Image 1 (cartoon, rainbow, N blue to C red):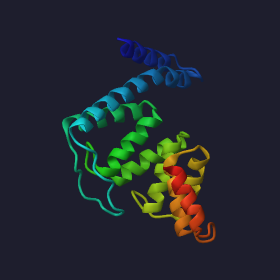
Image 2 (image 1 turned 90 degrees about the vertical axis):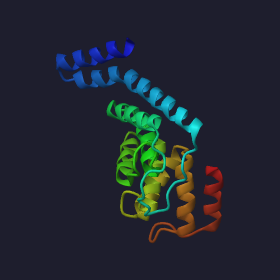
Image 3 (image 1 turned 90 degrees about the horizontal axis):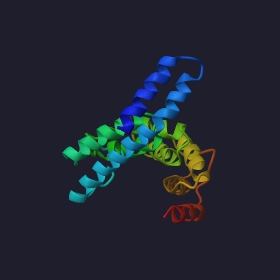
Length: 193
């Protein structure tokens, strides 16, 4: 009942018009997106009780999904609704599922766009996902310089995946920007753990 009331309130706020109407509507929709995220998490955890998540694919692997249960499909639908309502956490969770093919066939491009959305919203996990996508060429062309930029942004916000990506980049080096440094690579990958 609360969700329906909040949804009607959002529509009313949008209908009222005015310069601040869309901002008020986004604020009113926030509780809805949190409820959607909680439902998606519930469905995803129910599915994981019956099977384990597949391992992330090798870079360039675009084979189909390995996990397509009804709960996974419904979880993805709920995550999509939460993303549509502006929930950046749902964008990261859905990106991770598209990255490995849970609840839908693997879709690296969609995963990248979702990581991008979360990163632009300031979510550190989105920054780490975006860094990984650029580093591995998952859903976007490989670009170590962009991977480095996003890894540094996420690392500043204490994101573990960003720290891991920074460690990998120190191991590889980034021409003109970052010399390969085994000690720094070890430091950042250990810090990520």
